[in-house]
Amino acid sequence: MNRLNKLTFCFLTSIVWLMTTPDALAQTIARTAATSGNPIFPGWYADPEIAVIGNRYWIYPTYSDKFDRQVFLDAFSSPDLVHWTKHPRILDTTAVKWAKRAMWAPSVNEKDGRYFLFFSANDVHEGEIGGIGVAVADKPEGPFRDYLGKPLIGQIHNGAQPIDQFVFRDQDGQYYMLYGGWRHCNIAKLNADFTGFIPFDDGKTFREITPEGYVEGPMMFVRNGKYYFMWSEGGWTGPNYSVAYAVADSPFGPFQRVGKILQQNPAIATGAGHHSVLNIPRTDVPGTDEWYIVYHRRPLTETDPNHRVVCIDRLSFNENGLIQPVQITVEGVKARPLK
Ligand code: FUB
Image (cartoon, rainbow, N blue to C red; front, side, top):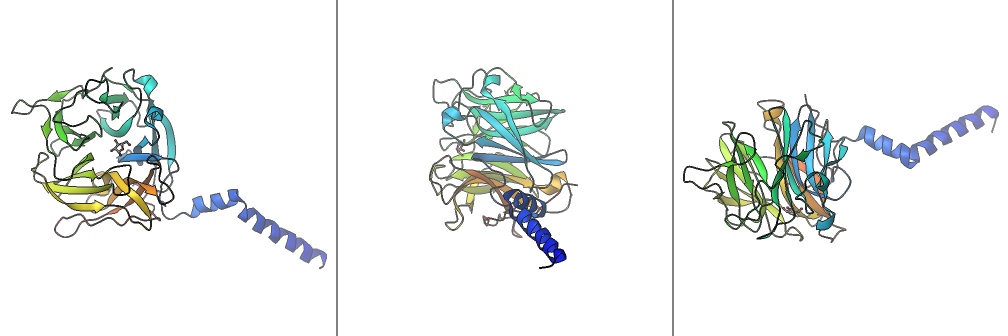
């Protein structure tokens, strides 16, 4: 080999070596990733709620571990559903004196320039301290501080464990909370400053709207004037955890179960459930009908109940407004930068 050929050989070999080191590979993957992949970020997390705040997507999940280790909440943000930034410990039990463990299912709403994070803590049972609380911050990444110094809902009403809260803004601007474990779901009307609830006309504060099959993880959205109520069924520790829904003309129902739309695929993952839904048009491009579902599932290699990961896939409707069964994927969704 002459000197020029030797130099060319060395140069090419170095390029090939550089490109195959893990760092070079990681950068290449990050630069060229066209889809989010599933899971969308590393770590054991569950019960994700997705929102658009400003020009970023935000996901607020439960940290999935033994109840005694669930003493904080992390959040994740992204400009495009593909590249995610972790915001660690946006809230932890040191900021909430009544919360000791089992911080679950955060639900975040922006109101009057502040961010309100509803969460549950302590896996509360009759006579215990805990339940659903609310924390507040000036930014979506916190730091959040306890808003009330006590639970917003600390008692058991209509048999519903005070967990898995979802705060829903109705078309007229009124906020409602749906919540409940132990196979019961209540709806309650939040007051204007989120310090409590306004009783309904019948004098009751907590109205039960439990549909057939309901277990936990309620959420609601409106599409074409119809109220879609969704929930999780089955046991969250097992493979059959899944999501079903009902449709009605009001947030109070009556809700007739339509069927399951999210469940395990034994070739991809098990235990798919406790989700939230994002509609792009409301926040970005009015007139398109672009929907995403964010949910947790268990990788096929895992049996530990807490080994749950956060995933995203597309959600769609048929011409009658019925939700099509979700195809859970390994690829996730395409990059979707916000305008
Ligand atoms: O992550 C803790 C609990 O598991 C949630 O509150 C339930 O909905 C289930 O996902």
